[in-house]
Image (cartoon, rainbow, N blue to C red):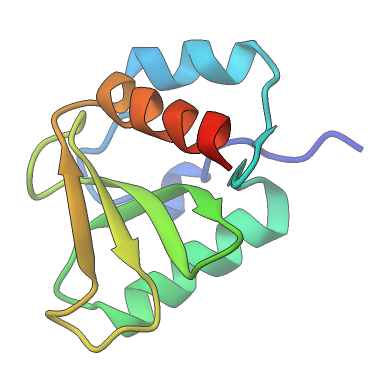
Length: 118
């Protein structure tokens, strides 16, 4: 089954483009690096729609979830196409933000540290 690795254009915030580093990472075909998993297919769409409902004042594009917590890594259009935030999903609006990273690459380094420590 060939599941979508990125959201279709109609579900993306206006003006958002996936960062090149993220697209290159997807080409490596790494989907699981415990405790993180890349969101794909229907799960990607459902989590994106849920984030829009729970945090309507944000412009978030999810791409990975940490399965031992309700954490989701998202591109944050408010901070720029390359900025990544880790949110604790289902927290009350205003309390969901946990960490911020200047780029996908910076987030990936932290996620790989998580994987090595897990």
